Amino acid sequence: MNPYKTYMDRQVLSPQAHDRLLALARSQYPPKKQNQGGHIMKFTALAACAALIFSLGWQSLGKPPVEPVTDPLPPATTTPAPFQEDADPVEPVENGYLIHSPSEERLNFYAMPALNFREEYNDIAASIALPEGSFRVELTLKDLQKVFWGPEGKPDTLNPDTDLPWGLGWNGYTVHVVALYDGNGDLWMFTVYGNKDLDSFELQVSPGRLPPQCLADPDGESVDVNGTEVTSYYHAYDRNGDGLTDHVCTSEFLVDGYGYRFRNAYTETGKEEFNVAEAAKFLNTCFVMRAAQWTDSRCYFGHIAHNDNIPPWEETNFDTLAEARERTEFAPYLPETAPVNWSEFHGRLSYQEGSYNYLFVRWSKMYDNVEIDVHLPEGDSTDYYHTQLVDVTVPESYDWQLYDGPISDTVPQEYRMAFYKPAFRAKDMSFEVVQARMHGHDTGGEICHFYVIHEDGVVVGYDCSGVTAQEVWDLVEPTL
Image 1 (cartoon, rainbow, N blue to C red):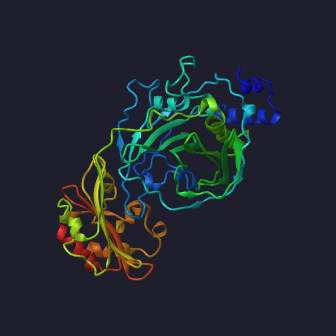
Image 2 (cartoon, rainbow, N blue to C red):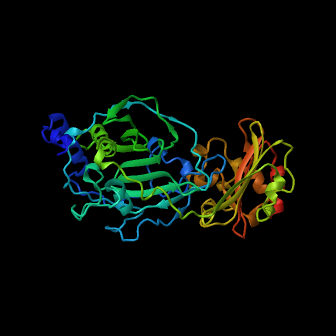
Image 3 (spheres, rainbow, N blue to C red):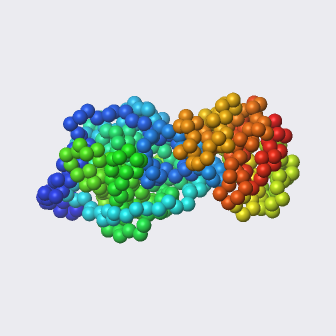
């Protein structure tokens, strides 16, 4: 008989552990009927940093990500998951799977590790650069079951209603499972998103290292969990401005060649009959126990470690405008000569079949840039820009000259979402429209941002500073 199990069978549940178990039970099974739905974030670019949903708020899981004002990064694409041929044991709900985990497995809660949740706040770090040729695959519930139960998946001896190990505490959560691969088809990061009412979690796993993130956690104190060093953090704050306190717990560790980050958030409504902070820490500890402490139940990733279904892709840099114009499909939307006498130039083509195809050029001098990015139709990659369309006959929706102050304070709410970088139909473009987009640059001169949608579906973006409206119009007019 396993000496470890013999020892644990002799243990007695302490009053403190009993209280924590009751807190988890109340949080997982409150008297009111659970909300069986929920929206899951549908994202198209992991470069937008999935971890920010916990630092800045997961207020609206169905909203598209805000386009970052940075150099364009290739968004990850989605391809069919090749791993499972059988049907899933449960019907998926909107953008995910609703988890049912009856409490039938035996779990020694009194053996839970004592994690050191340091109450610290993290800082925003640099953006994540995705590997070249990266693509994402939506995984199935069966794929997730193999992660927690091994290559054979869910044991036949378990209750048919059991979707995942009940000790995770994910009962009632709607989960969304994604694998992100590099251009060689090797797993780069595995992610599970979960939400239930106001509560949420995110699990990230990467081979050989901790998963990259946009948050720089402070130095923490690690604890030893059965030979694995686990570092944990705890933050309590209103992450989305709704007036409610969110209790956010994070644990990080490396085990069996994989780096884990599990971050969960419980929102305190003031109506609970349990300690919300302790319940949040308890759920976090449940995952650490499953993935790090129990040597016979470590996670398995062999079935998703590699994907041969790699969509064709290309990433090419250009040293001169002439090299970029050799790509003839993009040339009609690029200037024939450099629009400014600035020596610093950068160009790049990013392509992935069925996902995106664009070419970016930029001239730079100190704080000023002239940037043009040409997006050819590929999959649904240009759909977003049509949501930015404005009516040229309604100047209030795009004319920066009408406002003096931040967009959030001066522009009417119905125009704010598209105002920073609106899209215009090519037939509506004019010098007057360009003039309307010009406004003061904080380092001097003027700056403007806008898209032009051409009749053939090509979208061209312009981000220009340190130049005049006439110079910008000289870039746009020849493409019309």
